[in-house]
Image: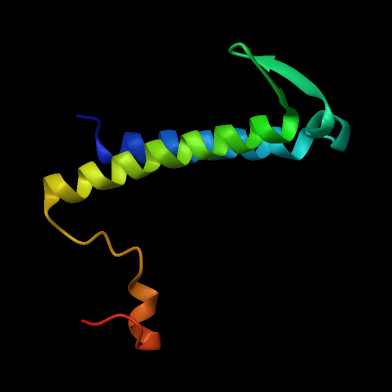
Length: 87
């Protein structure tokens, strides 16, 4: 099992690296075509695929954490103030 602090640091570093890459991408990069793992895709398509892939893994981490700890992780705490969340 990865210690909580190490996991949070790794995720934060990954997001910082991704933000730096995204900031450097030009319109022509997004419109260009690339051959990635045998598929020809636009740069924009590749960006969406990477974001989706990261989101899936982040969801897996969240799900496993909730199952192991048996608690609500509080992602929607702010909804309590709106009355949209019971409890």
